[in-house]
Length: 399
Figure 1 (cartoon, rainbow, N blue to C red):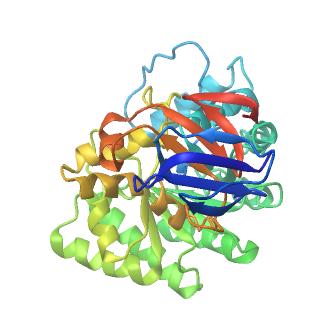
Figure 2: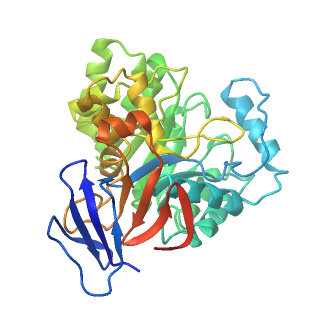
Figure 3: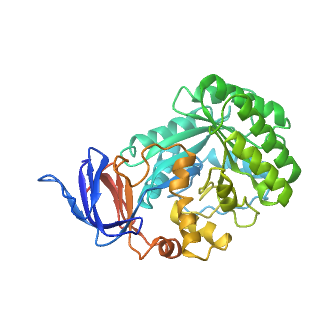
């Protein structure tokens, strides 16, 4: 079913009206809009309609969702957590496909209909994680779009064969090349970046780099990334995830980096970590740098927190950024919806006629209030098909 008439809904918390979806796209919006005989009609009961959430950075292959509680007892260092994860994943009782499917359904129930997932690629895993996530998507693709980042979590230059596997992943379902802390993980910032930019340029793929490195080293590497993006004509095709170095940069350093990022079209994604300074997202956006929030690591061997709810992530951004006015709170919501879609170049995302017939209904007075209260999603629609209701996934989609 891709035809649907939603009545008595308030697009972006505006005036109440109807939304007609035909053939999976928004065909009409207005107070007098009706549908053809026999169309499914749902009374929105005055709920707010917003464009769906975009989960722009998550790790579906790492998830432990649905398994018994996992206690984390490992030092808080990148290498220790990497090694710990490898050991634990060797004996998990559920497959990647089972665990990834659990989280996909949870994300959809919370209103996300597009996911970008990083998937570990290495000689340890080969392409098994990629294939597992794709298998899970086969059962959920009616409800959520997926793009996959081939991610060298264990390192790339220090793990011979990884770069070749990452390139092979692009032929088997991945569409983005990942990277991680070029200096501290691989010990060769320029070599690491030259390799991933080389693969991306050859395969016409996008890039999404984890950059946890802080201070001068992180800023130096951001400069290297911007330099390569401009040289290869990859403006607006490169994202840096985390970019903690921007959270501690001086005012002069931040101004210089914003110039570089805007000129090179480098996007920034933040998971709004609880104990680490993160990039000033609203200042970046105001300057013209594309940016968004995302969940990142959740319920895995790295982090016990998280629930696949992007509205909660928007609230977290608002809380940590001291958003107080309605305009500021609405801007935080945009970081998980409109700005996420813009950052990932998602054509058709929105609530205008001609856009995909995908939306979320949430009960509330206005957008500011739903950020603060984080109500359960009343309805999630993907291209005219109802895929979740009252915060719960609907098997197979339906009415």
